Length: 177
Image 1 (cartoon, rainbow, N blue to C red):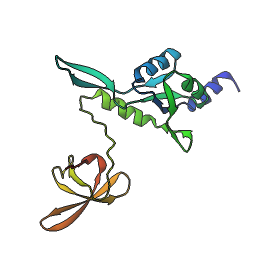
Image 2: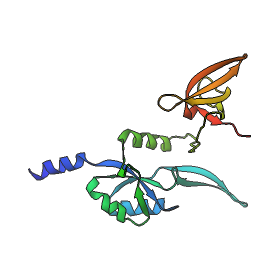
Image 3: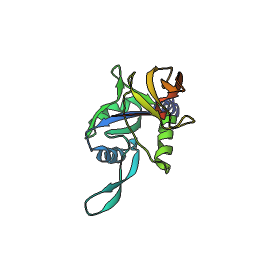
Image 4: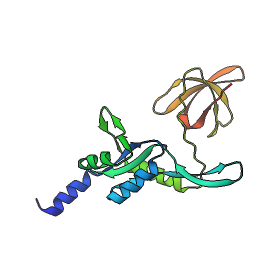
């Protein structure tokens, strides 16, 4: 097998992976990946920070302690040896590859003018929720359960009747208090 064919096969195994870093070490790890020639992506977002004497727009990682690297599995040891890297994000002990389209979507998101909020709210049956996006915006109801995919079933009591709606999680906000 000639060198060019080996390179093409090797290139085909290159995929994106999520790497977990030490707290507040994302920028340092990203810089070290760049210096090592490892392709990396650190999604950043601009936020307005306020101190007692001033306000300033600062860039901070969109996903705290996470960086994405595009590597061939044979280069995992180089990634692990990078100071500040804790581990790969794994499933059943194996690093999970991330599809290119998801990285592309993240790039679009951070390059847009949209206000981005990341949360890890866990919804449980019985939670009171409000629809914050879509055609049902403003409606409130009780979470009944999880439907197929990333959809949730909520019960909306309007006109004395129970209406059950399947709705994406991203359209919901938990009502507290």
